[in-house]
Image (cartoon, rainbow, N blue to C red; front, side, top):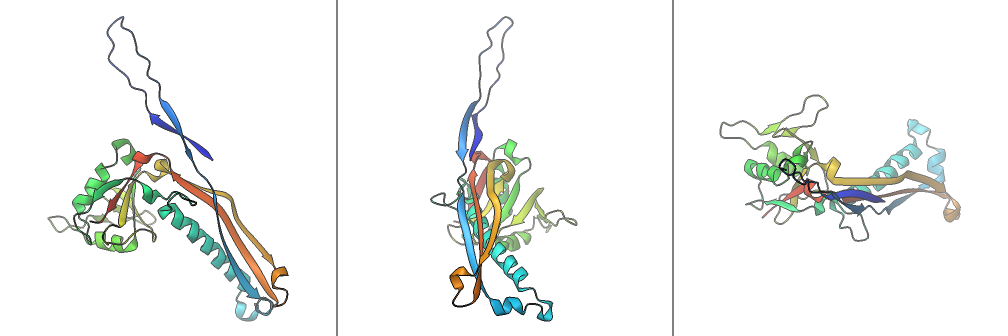
Length: 238
């Protein structure tokens, strides 16, 4: 799938009365989102399926939940950390905005610097993404008056830092030397993710005929790519 992008914008200029107005056209480019297959197979014994009514435990529903979650986690991980080589480009491949002074801690000022490493238009609708250990550390940050910089969300609203939503992603790095711990920017405009055709769930007992097992196969095809590279920046540890 080809996604159109704008690589440069039109510019206006002051023109004198009767002066010539210069032409200024935007320039367009393309970003490619290739799709990759993520799959899992779960084998279930026929006896277990036949006896699933005992205790009101539905085995096949359990298998469906497990298999669907397995391929979902696999694709989601590549949306975060994928290298783009025979796999999706993860949003963690964005440019470095800030390198933390410490290998094990992040300051409030570094989070502000990360915000301003993203150009102003992309800070509208921007958000933070980080791992749970980083969330825990940042929740403890206080200003000079002892007030937490973290603002808990109300009801279904996400928590916030400096007015921007915060989302936890288990695929982000921990507070360790050289790892990417925080990404900030406008994900809606900067990163495009795709699922092609939804999740396929298929079953057969043909290949397990001699063992009387049922194989349930889960397949999802998806991809992702950074479309506007200026929309996202990351913070890495020293």
